[in-house]
Length: 498
Image 1 (tube, rainbow, N blue to C red):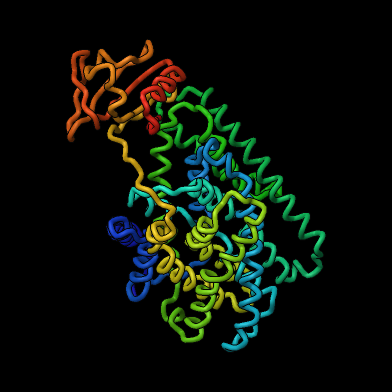
Image 2 (cartoon, rainbow, N blue to C red):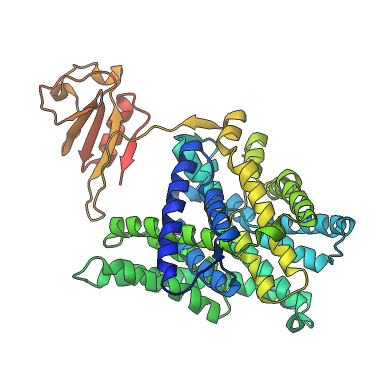
């Protein structure tokens, strides 16, 4: 067994990162969740090569990684897209999490004794709480690799749920650990309810305030080295988490809302920041998944009792607990079809967060903590193998998918520019007045910058003849007038470049 210490850390770390990136490429090609292969790489190296057993370090790295992941998720979320579904999304991420935990806890409490484990209901609820949040990040990487869109506004509701349900799962986990420890012996229902309310209110408030402070600071501070804007924003992320936790708020909720605020405001060097945090988030995910894979004891994982309990818990979560929680949570919202509700249920796959939260009972030295960690780990793998590999197929089976149109032009607009850049496809109705560019009636201050035809790009002139199927890159200062012109030309699908 190779001891992970000293100068060997950098070498082994480099090898692990390289293997993980290659595994991610394989996952992307075959439509499998990259998380599953990242965990697999960690388990493979930890089985008989690297000796690593530090739950404290893993928890710390996981906490830092989750802050970055949640912030980037918030920054990538368009408030305009989630506004129509903010009600059902928030109900799923709060009530849905609680219902999932309660239903699964009842099952664990009833089934565990038959396998030889006498688990009390509070302990079963703690196990269920660690597993109650979803990880939809891998879902969207699969959908995007397939160029697959979702009907009924399913993409934004799943993005909102996955980005905002980790805080509730974290609160439930910490709450149950407090109740099961000596410190929580005198806690009553009133105290627990107050704890949840204070966590949510302070988390949301501090997240909004820190997000606005970050926007104000970045836009006011003129830094000569533009790379330092990323460092400045990192400082705000960690401040948002740690200071909110200091004032008894939910730090993970604060980080997500801070990202939502920053991402939906105009800020200096926004494009640079988005690119930096996208890459940094992937690094944090890979590191977190690898460490979790290294930490697990594979020999304990394949013990018959762990295999049986983990398998039953994972299957019950997929088949009963998640669907029941989704259908109950969405009762007030009539606009979703039954097929949409089944799909939301199916893509509620587990990821690294449940495994990370399962470390908290281990560090608190609670009874059955190691068993709980192994069961959560096994259930997560089962979820990724069954649900994660069928995300695309289930959307097709339920008739909820459609082929997403891919942009023909790869263009990034500076945030300071007020012009609008759009991409449209030439149709027969557009050519009714003539087939040359000068005969197309466009608003003033509007130009066709480039044409894409049969794999070639070229800059047009007024006499350039247009053909049906040509892709036009159009820039304008008259957005409303151009939108009206598009409607008159019978163009329904307009792709905007930001």
